[in-house]
Length: 494
Image (tube, rainbow, N blue to C red):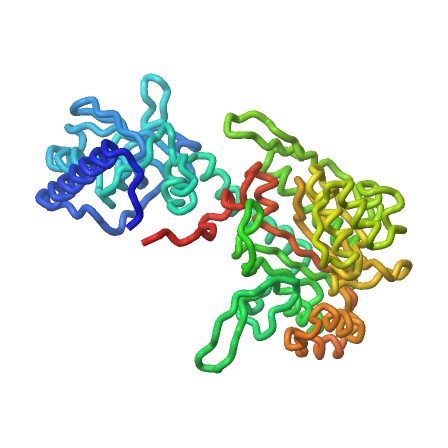
């Protein structure tokens, strides 16, 4: 068993609190009260009632007790939901002796239903006078301190329910996430896009260069993979005649965990027949600005530290800068970068303090310079266009420069938020690209996808948006764990 590092006094205090709550549970049972009651019909949600308050309403509300002020035979409590709270006044005479006896066994953290009438206190606080209190669930463990909340990151991420109960900021972030995702769906549907679903279990994982999670299907007797991207299936739908499709999907990549990476993550991918990467960039720019204006109060997003001090401001004001990849690398590494030999580029990286490995190919060295000297330093939005073709095997080659492809990479706050392509629809070139990418591992080539392309895929624009990173940027979160309800964690020792 892992060693308990809490002070002995804290362990003893917790044991005493647990004992007292068990005794209160027993007392409720003796009173004939079901401490884990059932159905309770409500007329209002606590925060909505407070927001649209009117006196002398008969109401039925339910929620968790998050504050309790004992004044003898009259008590005030806060009844809360994920959206907010309302004050409840509980008086022994109003609810009767039997209910009062049960009520006195309640604690902060318990769930109750209240039937009563609305009124305003002398200090102007919207309140509900309880006429009946119903116990809905007895909390057998004390909640975190109201004032300090959950401050231990281990508890914050592993026991997210405690974080949501005690930290208003966390509740705000996850409510915003839900609203933004819903709005993105609406935004695309209003522009004629159809939401679809594609397989999470795939015979050949494709659509990205990433390590998949492997599994095995017993009935079929075959290896399968959790998808790393839905791209190749969405393109099959373009072949089938769907001209505007999108999927909000879960992807899985068996790779490292960091401040910006979780092995299970959410992506939006969308494909638009007869469009190109420039139109997709316009779509993404307008949609992100719409989200910021709707939910963040404007196009300037402040990121703050733990003390509430602004550490940086991201300016989303349009139009966003668009610049070619080669131009940006040359700005960072020297105007002569693209004329240097591979050995000269390696030497220049030493001067620039950009770490590279001996086995890196020439395009990988340039990409390392880009990531360290351009991407990580870009705070305001920038569309990086016309990337080296080796980096994006599924995009259409540029007509004027065969070394690059018609794509953008949207960088905001030092991270890639969205790639967008003019999609490659030539099955012959696509096969060549995938064979070059696979090398000797030809089994990784999705032959069914290539066959689909041979039936004809219309020219199209495509995008991906990393939802988790987008929410981080819009809410000021500094870790992906702060915007994923249940991030992947190492298993606790048992």
